Length: 296
Image (cartoon, rainbow, N blue to C red; front, side, top):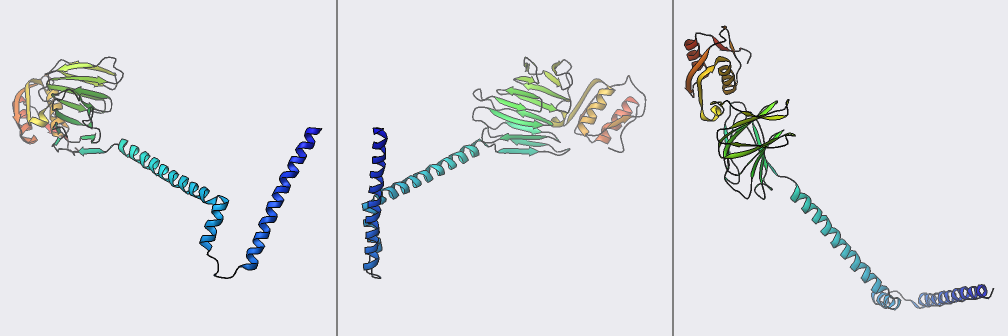
């Protein structure tokens, strides 16, 4: 009971003090209104004096400082976020060729890429050469890689990855398979879910089938794998079916044989000749009739 009475007395005393402060403030305000004359009061000076007595200046100054500091922090955070985001965004350099077009492209490290027709190549110029050298491609391209053991060179296709230190090789990507042919040096060929990559050395070739999901080492050498680059077609006792496939690939046409000759084989070399001359020589040599489809 005594504690409750003490609390009531304490609250009443606080209320009386508040009332007394309000009464004093009201009296001062009435005094100012009664004695104020227009232009006789320096408002800025009066405000500073009032603010000093009431402790407002310090609060306002602190508030302004806090707001300024907060603005700077927000600005730095925004700039930092933008900088990190901008720095991490890739900056792609892309090259493409059309049917029948051949193009040589030098990468920033002087690696030379020779692109066949209907091919694309791209790389992130911000990351290329920092720790690794990575390019992405479709179609067919021949790479002469500048050796750099500290920064491996990788070619990515839709389903495979070829990694080297310094060598020359070709990657040919088709819708259903990817083939790698090594001319010099050594490459690491990985694909899909293949548990172990395949190491290929000079003169070796391998292919990855999207259907079989495995890498096969090609035992039979194809002398025309680089014909699009060398401008030379070579056949050495080659079955006619294989001759036609190579001609279709090189000239980007579809050739049909109007004479039944399943056992025909060809031995010949053609150096940068037009298709009609090549077909004339083959037809006369094998006594057959190869012609391109009219609708191609």
